[in-house]
Length: 310
Image 1: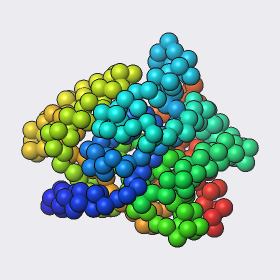
Image 2: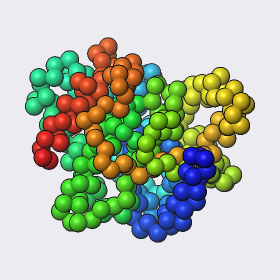
Image 3: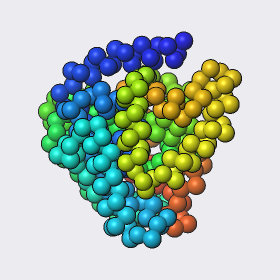
Image 4: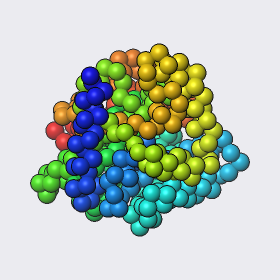
């Protein structure tokens, strides 16, 4: 019943999407746009995409420097969007280094008392996101879900939320605000909200041509094929048996042909951890062996910014 309702909302949303004049995707990394590539196609040629980082985070898995690896990722992002007709002029890369972000988050985890010293680094990211939103004046904004799967996903969501509050305060504009689930519990729960999610779910069934374009976008990322391969293997051994028992998706292509997202719940208490146990947020995330956590890396920043609004 829940699934059928979500798909009916998806049918209504597809009609609504045609009416957005300036839809905006605010993503953390190059390849995040693939999370809802079908949705992006339905938003049409007016859609714009902002990537907040330069996506250099996994440079250490290659023989490239962070700068050269970032250049590869950024080129892949443009090629990915070109597959669905989004031109480079419709994109913006804010170019913040993942390496630097993780370094600062790990320093904050290790020494929470350094918040005031570390916060100016994040002020720059927050301001850059706000500048883009004020520049574009979107009527609909799509960003990553607040879900405790990746610290940069959560930061981008939060900074987008802050920017939209400021936009409403200064101009009275209140764009529709949606978020897209990526993953949590490493990649065991991917591209869907968790079973106990209380917000409104919207699901789209992609056409065969929309799915083909989505797969083409994935192929535009040679640097990420190992990660895509890991997801395919997890799906094969975990989700395929479940699909056989429940009449759910049995192949990765069937799974990717459904996209789930929803309006950001109001109110959403950003001071409440996405998971009851801190361990389950950003599982095993670290910077050069120093942990990154919700309670000691993200929450102090969130609390500081929210106090500034109060």
